[in-house]
Image 1 (cartoon, one colour):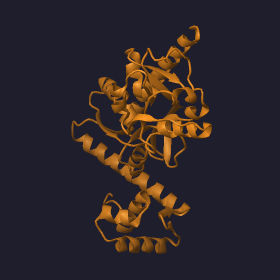
Image 2: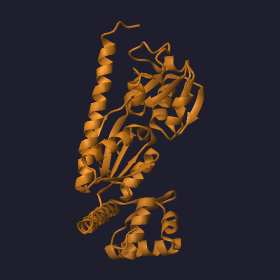
Image 3: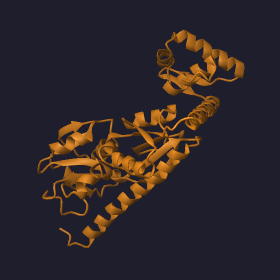
Amino acid sequence: MTPLLSIPMRYFMEVALSGSVNQAAARLFVAASAVSRQIAKLEDGLGTPLFERRTRGMVLTPAGERLSAHLRNALLDAEQVIEQVRDLGSQSAGRIRVACTEGFAGSLMPGMMRSFQTGHPRSQFELHVGAPDEVSTLLMRGEADLGLKYVVAPEPGLRIEYAMTAPVYAVMAPDHPLAPRRVVQVAEVVRYPLAVGSRGVTTTRQLFDLACSEQGLQYRANFVSNFSAALLPLMHAPDIVLAGHHTVVHLIDAGTLVARPFSDPQLQQRRLQLLSLEGRTLPALAHAFVEHAVRVLTQTGRRKLGRARRRAVSPAT
């Protein structure tokens, strides 16, 4: 945590971010009792509780939420000004810190960053790839400017820069028995060998398991991984991989694979979101990258829609 804050404020922010006195103490390299004393001192000075003490950790009160948001945005704005001042005396390029889930890291995000640098050659990127919760945490901590992930529910504290529907697809070889279909059903897909994401890690697996549970269906996964890119090389007919369109768009464009949407409503509940921290003013270069990312994502969506329309005019199988 930045030294711009007083000790009580620093300790408060660490507990707010981690939800735990012990975890905050470990990050601050102090005793948990010292963190507790500083939090109590801050609450006494403000005349209001900032946390609810629960068995599973510390939860911000409305007053704590307001203080946390103010301090977080103030720190980020101060960091932005410091970087701008440094840049005035140097030739360094602007830094853009991006976090995304691994499904976007294989092809989409590298291509997006490279094409942006063509028009902004002095830009520099820091890319962190992690689980969906990790992407949100990096944004909340101010350790990432932008985050790209799949979302199934709103997340407080984060601003949506761009969103689009992102249903789950059944990805298969072009000669798969289900490939001629315009859409597929979960009840059909479970009859084939499946490669799926790890339980509790990916939104793809979460929604597929929800659909199976509601329909009383069971399936056997031949391959399970928290890294979807590892599943694709394992595919052999008649395997099916559950994935998002953006994860496999480069393979679809190459004709290596096809992706078919599900008709089941549970598999259509997901959205792709480009996120930033609520209340923060993005640096100019990061804002320019947002505009570039929106163009790329929109173009990718149009290619997907174009393929769907071409299938729609073909005879149904």
